[in-house]
Length: 285
Ligand code: NDP
Image (spheres, rainbow, N blue to C red):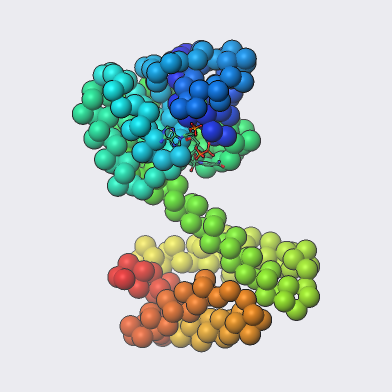
């Protein structure tokens, strides 16, 4: 097991990662573009590096450009870089080739918790890249949370990360629209939250409203039976909802996008199928 780890990037995430490694008893070296951000970590026992260095470098920065800016001219031969920064899947693949061209190995990752959650129960990160390299460092990385390897393709970790975040952002934004709609009639968000807790819980459950599971089976089978809930009925309902937002004087970009997507799937001849048919329009823009 590695006992030495270098943390590169000391924003809220990287600084908390460094503190977590220190607490777990690691020999921690830190580097940040703005050197002063290392001061509180040095006080806690971390070593300050003048240049990024170390056999295992854990990186957490704004994006992958920051990694290029930080590691340009640094000897990466034989080094393992684990980058938990956000960027596009294509940028991650490019970066893996850039690191390999310098004799190192890049493991890419997307961490699914905010700074206070790092290393806490329930914390996890998606990792992609060579499994055997990740395996060598899993015990160390586990200090940050569960290590979930999703495949060799370096872009995959970010695709998993973005898929999770997309559901997080869109679900919570949909809730904000809902709160604003009812708010326009003087209803407080606190009054509606029990209904949304019920809805979100039942969507993820096994009951008659367990649409996450139902939809998943349909998506994997590529068959979307409309049964009692045709897409056309829902496209018309979505149009009514769009008018409700507009009539309440609210911003309508998200409801308008949903309305247009449903209407397009209907125009494409799938109105008699179920909501799941929308994925066919998503796959064929
Ligand atoms: P930021 O995304 O703001 O990243 C800050 C760090 O990036 C600092 O160390 C900063 O250095 C460095 N940086 C930015 N540009 C450069 C550059 N060109 N060259 C060198 N260093 C650079 O803060 P966070 O810590 O919040 O996030 C880090 C990563 O973690 C991001 O990719 C984010 O998407 C991801 N993430 C964040 C979560 C969160 O809740 N905060 C949750 C999950 C993932 P300097 O101090 O010198 O400016």
